[in-house]
Length: 145
Image (cartoon, rainbow, N blue to C red; front, side):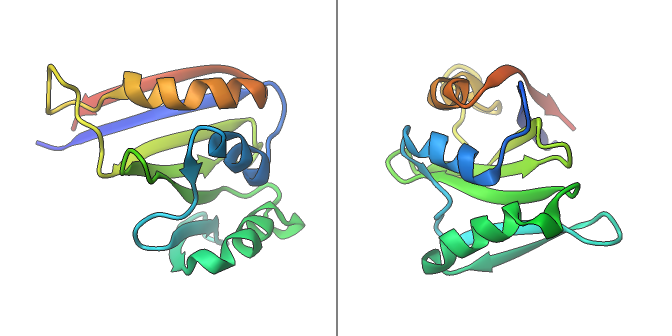
């Protein structure tokens, strides 16, 4: 049996990849993860094509995700906490008021139920900086598939 966990964030107004990554960096998060920087843009078929790039190209990648060519398209970028050695993927939906986080890099397990994700830990790390970026609310889930 596999599990799916995610946290869906809703913002008061559209956000940029730049503003969310900058806000999360206040809590030690970075787009640089063990494989470099993973990122994606929605193609003409509506699919996300994930690519990996070197950490040195981070600013260029983020600028590209925020560029006019990606307005109205879904984009994604990895986010990682070096200190906690965990991270995941941030998906920015086309309207940019909805951002979803999927813990997929060394997912933290809950202390009581190890098969489940420690969603409270991720929320504690992400809510304060995202609140300052205009967070309106969130919905979190961890379900068995």
